[in-house]
Amino acid sequence: MLVQAKADVTCIFGKSWDLHVEQALRITAERNLEMIEGSVAYLKEATQKPVFYDAEHFFDGFKSDPGYALATLESAMSGGADRVILCDTNGGALPHEIERAIGAARGHLPAIQLGIHVHNDGGLAVANTLRAVEAGVCQVQGTINGIGERCGNVDLTTIIANLELKYGFRCLPEGR
Image (cartoon, rainbow, N blue to C red; front, side, top):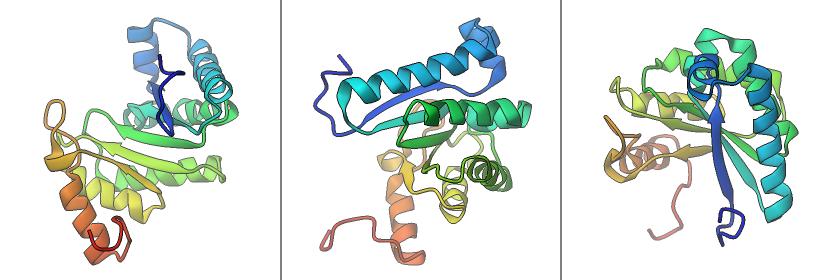
């Protein structure tokens, strides 16, 4: 089904936190890296379209084992991912942690294009997203009014206004 979708981009997710690899997936860390690379490579070949990879629980994984969290990004890139989205799936990261992890990802994989996906459990979705943009991400995932699981995702109506009016980014087509 995913391969047959008429979408311009395919986006998949995988585990970046060693805890989830071991306890939820119940596979080895090495097997997870193989699955990430193989899944991205398969979709890249099968769709002939850009493939984005959402690194689920990246910031928790980075706190637990930075080397392994970065290795998951490297596997996605080795499979041909066009962009990697770093996810604060639990919504527990602080802005300085977002910046530090993005800096590490960019330092480890200089050619990487990054996006950000945050949840608002700690009330920091907007602050964390703005810090991620300041740190160089080129894509923001969010929802209108922040609707999403648990406490929601970042509110795009707030983010777009901040990026357009305070940061000078063009987010919407002229006249909208």
